[in-house]
Length: 248
Image (cartoon, rainbow, N blue to C red; front, side, top):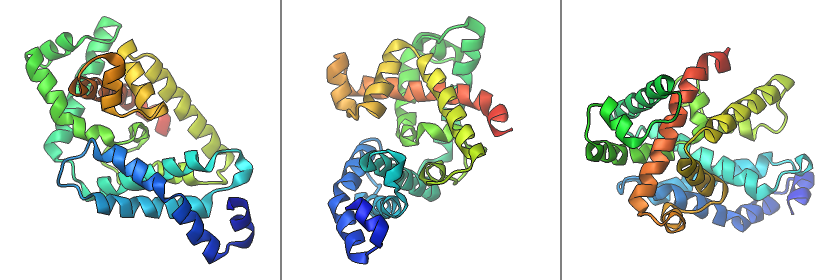
């Protein structure tokens, strides 16, 4: 039906496609909601996700050899995250804590030449291990932001990397830039400690929930949440350091 719609651009076929793939919106919103405060309205996110689905239906090009479901999930997720960024639901204090921890982790890595342990990070922040893990829990809710936001020119920017992903006919420079960023991100992920790398792979590639990952690793869901948050903070610190060359 997608190919037929691209040929006819029929409003009836467009509506049918949106209804057919509406479950993707519920899937994406359901995963994101797990990490959000309770006051965030699910129906609002479904509305934003539906806008993303409509965008995906309108922009999808079957000739590019990408499954529609894969493409649509990226665009839907981007639309929901963009709405969350615009609403600025994350308190400034949490953003500041996140940046502080990311910078501390990166500084310790440079000094030690390896990823630091939790206790070493806590010591550098002049905290007990329990205090540091509690801090990770308070930061955890911002981990919903896509890993690709580390490539934005401004960490508080409202611009969304999904606009680049959604572009079905990028120029040569855009293609090269996106490939370069993906390579750098892949290298950063590969340098994570093994357990954190596994959490990232299971969550972002295999689509497991934090609870399901906890069953795989035989740890509590709250511990998985800490590992997930710490992994993203490690990545943020590394990508922050690389941003000038990426934006140049």
